Length: 502
Ligand code: B12
Ligand code: SF4
Image (cartoon, rainbow, N blue to C red; front, side):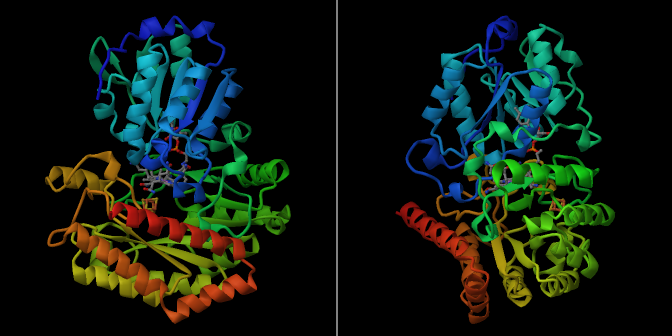
């Protein structure tokens, strides 16, 4: 990578008051074919609102900082197109949201931006730079990293930049000072999400957002949050929002839904919360408020949850309030593996939860992980068999990606079992044919993992019982558009896979 010195922050800050557009927030593309302008990604079938950027933009606007969002992920923009857009808008600061697999694309974007406009201040935030700050800030194209929740940290940083102030006072940032790397104290998490303004939906290309095809019952579909944080300890997961859960009030949740209905014709909500009905009392209050305001007649909604926090009454109320699908992270069909990843749920609890949801007429996507540490052919087969026994509407079989920030990642780094830190390989969900998996369990090869994943999908979906279930749904619920989208994703993924296999 070409390196050049951009550490002269003072020179850059002098420009700030003279610039019209202060901040440009960027959601980068993730698919390298898209980034290189070679193809439109299948990502376009799952294009969700970048809630973090939308929330930051709202706080900036409220505080008088002019701000724009470029959702290059939603717009399928290539790196070249993004760079010319950034140069055209010429912001004082460019803020980029980053998950691990987008990093190689982000490196290239900031390399080109800094080469052509060195005075644009680059700020990275999001899950990946938050945990890898010490590593990433060594890249001279990155001026600042904002760790953790970014709304007020970023605002503080911008104020400091325009006043030529002292960065030491801004908690939550990492940067280079006189050649040395400095990590300021962590910033505190936002206590009360109600104090945040509503996300700046008006700055986003709202016509482009879609839910994953299997969740698309009604369109337009938008994603929102009812809470932040997760108290559980699953070792494969990175909980960037902290262990303490903070809730939006039911009134705020419903105001936001009403806003999305009124302004964007919203008919479906996907709660992006890690586990929405975590606190039963809060979930009941949200559902009741939805019903009282008649929102259950206007939108359907989905959420992720855990098998140990739902019960028959809760599910019945959720259904009444408009919930039609839940995602359950089952992860493994082998109790020993489940215990080893600190899931703290038994196979029996999963079985009971699925039965209760079926009774409540709520569909389930169960998600599984193949290739966890300790996985053998037998435990993977246990997972496939258990999935078939549960018989949920959808099943998703991911190959483990040990994301930075998760306990598994730290353990694999510690015991020397992490195979590579090439972030290109840190993509889950897609087939790994052309990737080099960062972790492969002992006694297995990459081909074994791929074969197990293929076997899982084939033996799950190509069964008369499941095919019939879907056929019935398509015909009786008139979900033709959804199934058409699913078919397109299937065909495109297949074509892409064939291409990568040469
Ligand atoms: C909903 C969701 C999705 C949705 C929508 C993604 C989207 N564009 O919003 C879908 C299903 C599409 C998805 C896809 C993926 N996801 Co996802 N997703 C989530 C989930 C559950 C919620 C995200 C969210 O809305 N958070 C709420 C907002 C408010 O928080 P935030 O985005 O983190 O932003 C805050 C801070 O991080 C910070 N910040 C963020 N960006 C920036 C930028 C700047 C400039 C600044 C200053 C601050 C800042 O300030 C924000 C406000 O406080 C999180 C888990 C979680 N709870 O965060 C996983 C999570 C973010 N996803 C993850 C991953 C890995 C992925 C995929 C890479 C999976 C894959 N396919 O390979 C893709 C990547 C797609 C993409 N480019 O975003 C990981 C990331 C781990 C890592 N180390 O990178 C997470 C953390 C899950 C996990 N527990 O492991 N995801
Ligand atoms: S997998 Fe779900 S329940 Fe477990 S820590 Fe992550 S967000 Fe929380």
